[in-house]
Image (cartoon, rainbow, N blue to C red; front, side):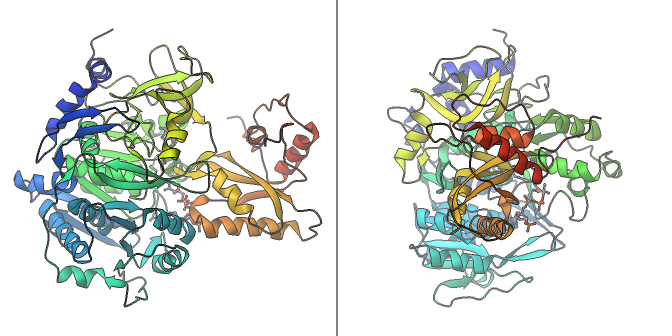
Amino acid sequence: MSSSPYQESYDLSINEPENFWALAAQKVHWYNEWDKVLDDSGDHYKWFVGGCMNTCYNALDLHIHNNRGDQLALIYDSPVTDTKKKYTYRQLRDRVAKVAGILTNKGVVKGDRVVIYMPMMAEAVIAMLACARIGAIHSVVFGGFAAHELATRIEDAKPRVVISASCGIEVSNIIPYKPILDEAIKQSSHKPTTCLIWQRPQYKANMLPWRDIDWESEEEKTKGVDCVPVLATDPLYILYTSGTTGSPKGVIRSNGGHSVAMKWSMDNIYNAKPGDVFFAASDVGWVVGHSYIVYGPLMNGCTTIVYEGKPVRTPNPAAFWRIVDEYKVNVLFSAPTAFRAIRREDSKGELIKKYNLDSLKAIFVAGERCDSDTLKWIMKVTKKIVVDNWWQTETGWAIVANPLGLEEMPIKPGSPTKPMPGFNLKVLDENGKELGAGKKGALCLKLPLPPACLMGIWENDERYRKGYLDHFKGYYLTGDTGYIDKDGYVYVLGRMDGIINVAGHRLSTGEMEEIISKHPDIAECAVIGVNDDLKGEVPMGFIVLKQGIERDHRGIVDGAIALIRQEIGAVASFKLACVVNALPKTRSGKILRKSLKELADGVECKIPATIEDPSVLDHCKEVIATLGYPIIKEKK
Ligand code: COA
Ligand code: AMP
């Protein structure tokens, strides 16, 4: 094997994981070092067992201790409210300590859960760090989710406190969050004792005096509290993510392993150094936001940008470039969808020319597959290196990337490059046999997983084992399919299950089917993800009506669309649905979703030998055409 820096690191991490990660852990501040680097005696891989630390201390206080207290920690840039605000590490620490004080006064102690339902404002980051400061476990819920989704998470996490804001702002639409929160608490059997609400001037929330407290006035009169030491293996947060069923999975992330992986990845993958400005244009509701808006940049002493806006329309497709120029951003990270949206409105990159992008070292994309065309376009118009990286909520950081801080490898568009240290990636066939170069199969990780990967599913060990570990003994199932080429480059092709990625947002088609089935006129349905030029994928629903339903089909379809918006939220982008006479099924009754997707995407649809009635597929094809699919692109 060649002895390139990447290869050396990778080999060491696989052959001697404990030595590799113990060395990486030296960069984290510990009150007490660990007794054991890795405990792999059970199903739950525990890193740095016995180690004692605090994530918030590492993200804030440590920099103040090291005389960097006056360096900028966070820039809040909000075109939707016309606000810009800057916080030094000291200023941010002081606010976080006070909010931690409020939580302590409300009885929150180490191990308690706090749900955070916030728009992209500095206070969202402050709330997360305040929890980490006192060892409370935060669970951030994306602001685009409706009351039902929020209720499910409150029900499962059982928070003592919920932190929220009166509203979010989507371009120019005010989305009142507080009524959504009130409705969610009404739907949940678990009731938090306190709701801490940031009142925004755009919408004043109605406060319930026995439960709700005004954040701003409470913060003014509260004294800051210190960091509470926690064990490395204590949970830092729970982040719910879509699974194959209606109930989301609470991915648990521990404090110690997470800090070590954040530090390692900031240095070695993103090549971001202390003092660098890091702009992850995502949302704190997603894992990218947790890792690279909040924890990674702050732990590494960078300045992070909290952007409350869109890549386009706030006010134009130059929003990202304006920010890069204005704050001298060194690293930009977003989803391919964001760049597709920019490209749609500024295909020649004319607006880019108006801004100085000299500070920018690289652009990273993740959250969904990045098509070669989009990757090449970003490189062409920005003249920057563009790195795709593949990961998931469960891993917390990149499984596959191009580690620019360690060794910049040649880019092959369409591939996120190579597995990162600790991720022993294999391609397996359906019998669990390892496949050779170029062969497509299930992308699996040989155990143990490296630090920061999920410690389990919140209060659902069975789901953790069944969903990830039981498929192939000794491996973690990522749920993605793909292959590794002869040079070791990884290609991710798509999911094996009912998960789809809509504008970088992970959604469950199974959950959509469960919701649509609640409609009184609907007998059964199938939801698939169809290719979309902007959002990567969008959901499309096929509905079979109950016998004897004579009502206008359009009304029923609209009702199903409204149900998804009401229960999951606008973020599902569920707008395409149709009524069919029957769903294509195998003789054993399994719905042939793959065939429906092939028809809608306009790719070759091989009629499965097990199909019960081939004429159903012909009928579905005709109905799909009424929705304007497949979209036939003109050859350029
Ligand atoms: N709070 C409330 N509503 C939200 C929301 C939030 N945080 N985020 C999205 N929504 C709503 C939108 O307003 C929209 O509602 P509408 O149907 O009433 O118009 C709906 O959810 C769909 O939103 P979105 O998927 O963002 O589509 P869009 O057409 O508004 O914008 C893009 C398209 C490409 C600009 C946008 O999807 C985008 O910025 N994508 C990047 C995603 C990203 O960063 N993902 C993070 C993973 S790394
Ligand atoms: P999430 O947990 O929301 O981050 O979504 C994770 C899923 O998104 C993965 O399992 C993949 O299916 C998809 N995904 C994320 N990043 C990439 C990428 N760079 N390339 C291909 N698919 C990706």
